[in-house]
Each structure stands twice: as C-alpha cells, then as structure tokens.
Image (cartoon, rainbow, N blue to C red; front, side, top):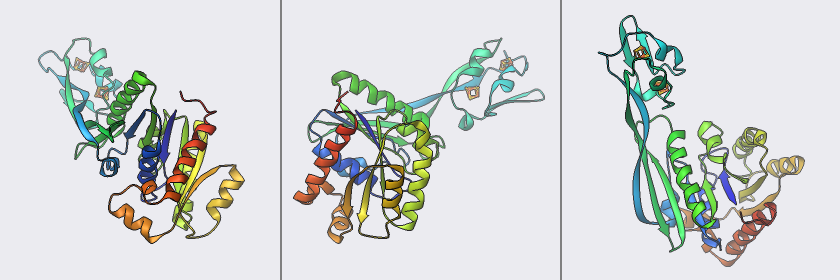
Length: 288
Ligand code: SF4
Ligand code: SF4
C-alpha cells in the first residue's frame, strides 16, 4: 500500500502526520520525502544515513564542428533548451527536461550527452527498520519532478525487495511537483486545518487530485480552531475524516522541538494507530 500525505498549503502538519504514522506502522515501511525543495522528514525520524546518490539529468552538448545547422533539434525541443539563431547553435541546460529527443534526432550525431546535477537522494534507516528516502534539490535547480522521479524509482526498488508499504510526504500545494508526488499512491491523505485559509487550499487540493480517481481521506489538524466548513465540505463530498489532531499548545511545543506527535501521549498514539488501520481498511485490507 502506498499512501501519499498531501496538503493544499504548507504548515498544515503534513510531515507531522507522515512521521507519526511511520512510527506506529507495524509492517516493513519506506518513508519517501518527495518535498524535495524543503525536505524535513529526517528532522523527526533522524535516520542513520546509509548512502547518498547524486541525481542527474541528461543534457545536450553540441559538437559545433559536426553540426550542419539543419535546425532539426531546435524544431523538436518543446522547451527551447536548444536553439538555432542564424548560424549559432545554442543550448540552455537549465531549461532542458532531459528527454533525449535532440540527441536522437540529430542526423550528424553532433550531440553528445552531458549531465546536469539535480540534487541528491539520501537513503537511511530510522529506528532500525524504517527505510527513509530523502530527495534534496540542488540550490538553484528549478525543476523538482526529475529528482522526485529518481526518488520514486528507489522507492519502488525498496518495495520490490520485501513488499514494504510506503508513506510519501508530498510537496504542499497543487502544482506539478505535488501531482507528481501522489501519482504512485493508492490513497491520498489530505491534511488540513479548519481555518478559512486551510479550507480554501484544501478545496483546491481536492479539485486538483480528484481527476486522478484515487481514494482520498482527510486528517484535520488543529481541530477546534476556525469553523465547520472543512467538515461540511467533507460530508458533502463523502470524504472520510480519518483522524483529528486537537489544537493544543503542548502539541505545538512538541512539534517545535522536532518530536513525533504520536509519541506525545497515549491518546494521540492511539489515534494514529486507528488512522493506520482505517487506511488499511480503505485499501481493502490489502497489504500490497
Ligand atoms: S540536429 Fe544536429 S546537425 Fe542539426 S542543428 Fe541540431 S546539432 Fe546541428
Ligand atoms: S534533451 Fe529534450 S528538453 Fe533537452 S534540449 Fe534536447 S530536446 Fe530539449
């Protein structure tokens, strides 16, 4: 089972939900931090690092002595990452999406493959059994989906080893990276808070993810704050609210210290165990 924990905006407690679920998970588990712009799962799970891999993207390097300026590569590239201006052939590596099309189409084999560094993927183990995968985007790198795909590949390789479940900490929002992060999931858990901003971003997330046709569930953080619009919306759209985290000062303090919410007290621990079991029930009780 692959569960993506997502939210319409940052600061809703998405990572807190992911890490709290992780420590009550009683099966082999991979936690994939796909919030590669600002990964923070490791701040809570404190994994012991096992390996770091650099993720790269293939980019074109033109051999001008072989290039006949036919322009086929420039015509093909949808991203204008390779262009022909008169007799000048130019590449813009930061705009390249690494599709490899220009290398394949060049009739003169004038384009070699270079590499652009996207960032790193760190693999570790937390508490002796939770495999953690963290994508960390290079400062200045604009595109996060290619690095996310690198982490997703490693995630599937880990699952193939022992049928582990996966918790994905998705980037906040509803942009391309967020959509990419939930693409592999069996269930999307939307974390929200019952405030006006929380409600607005929550509805955006619901609208964005709905066309994927995946089961969705809701965790309400800071319950007791704000109003009932999130609850009313869930009722109207038949979205199950699987857990509520109360709005309490000790919870905020616990989080600020980098501690795991489900370990604050017995009641919170039980609510995350119940959340885990409800997610399994939503997945038909299946473990695969
Ligand atoms: S396709 Fe090859 S030969 Fe044609 S312009 Fe591009 S690099 Fe030059
Ligand atoms: S690899 Fe693809 S995206 Fe990059 S320059 Fe070539 S055609 Fe454009």
